[in-house]
Length: 205
Image (cartoon, rainbow, N blue to C red; front, top):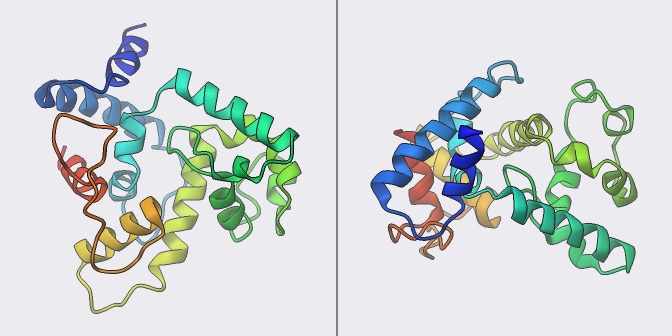
């Protein structure tokens, strides 16, 4: 019940930054314990990978997520292709993002046989398994695949921090240019920071 209240608290846009950091750190620590047994990457630590999605995770709302999932089902049912672009789940992934990285993920890491065999775009299968796609462990495995795949294409001459920034930019907007998006991340209103800046801030927590 205490943790449930914490999730509700973090869903409010207007919040003092000190309070946000205090409760946000608790929520991140809770997630870190949950992912201890999840697959690790040989490239980045779990804490570093987690920083890529921390702003999305801390502003995640269970109620809003249910609404997003209902829209996915509805849009898919009426043939509206926008269903692929609706973010959902603890790391706010879109179905077109999941489709891309599920196709190249290792095929023995999921308990669901349909997902293990997924090697070509089939949104019907994704819709049928949307409940599992909404799960933290599933989204972590897709996130890890995203990191392992994209890291290979980043220049070796860059520092570790610059490589992380590029991964953050790709995840947030699909833009891997060194010039980052200066738009303020509006989901957190206590400071006027970009998504990338929030990721790096939360990495220090």
